[in-house]
Image (cartoon, rainbow, N blue to C red):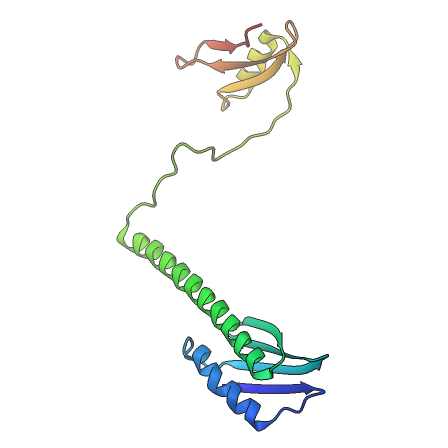
Length: 177
């Protein structure tokens, strides 16, 4: 464990370092690699503030607390760090588990579950005023489209013209009233 202590208006003693090192064993147990820790201690009024930052694997954890006793403040920080690290580890383990299940499914050739009963695609288009016969001609021009939405110039309402399954005829959807 790499520990760096900085004191602002407070002397960083060997006793503080030993105490911190002993307490940080609770946090170090979550990792195989060395933990880089910085402790900044300072006094503001009658409170002693301890700020602990720990970094490992590109992740940074940080806690700042104030107490009348410096050691109590460091204890609070370590409790906070341990909670952050436990949450981070749980999240990573869950993510790795999910990734391994996906990988396992790909290896076994099983299909991913299909999405059902959800809107999965949204198309945006411009509504143009036209007569139904013009809409039919426009739909014929675009061979791949199955329907066309337009504003009917006769009724000033939104209509939909669509190809019937026979491929020769068309249907028209008009709102009532």
